[in-house]
Image (cartoon, rainbow, N blue to C red):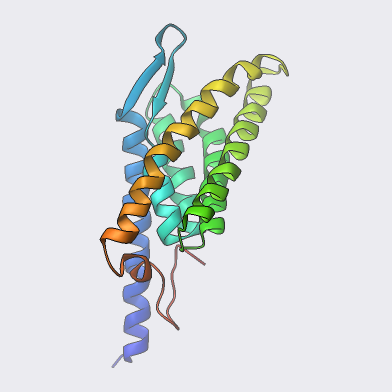
Length: 190
């Protein structure tokens, strides 16, 4: 017969895996299907995939953020004509989710959210710039993508911060329930 501690740990691990899977899927779907064209002639779009990524990282931590972001965005790239970008998205957006979760540390206060957003701006711009340099072998041309990357993150931040703040205040105990109980394992947050 299993002890209650082992059963609780197993249930917590299953819940964490499910949360990772749901937010990975949401990130992929929001990236693929919720888009606003900004420069249609150049193929420029703003997608909403960063919204579930930031929510996941803010409430469930750095590992959930990294998995939801990196895997979710890479899957989106693989399932669309942007497949060449999948490795860049896996690394860059995975790092974005990790750092957002690291800074908010499952306590998404406004100062932490703002600091995490600033860090993500830097990671997005640097990561995709380096990715373009590697893919296209040019140091100057990738600078043209910087304004689009800034817009992409700005939209995600402007939408996510109010949602995170609303979830935190509207659902009493939501923030504390997203953190592991003392002595239990969180597979996606280790």
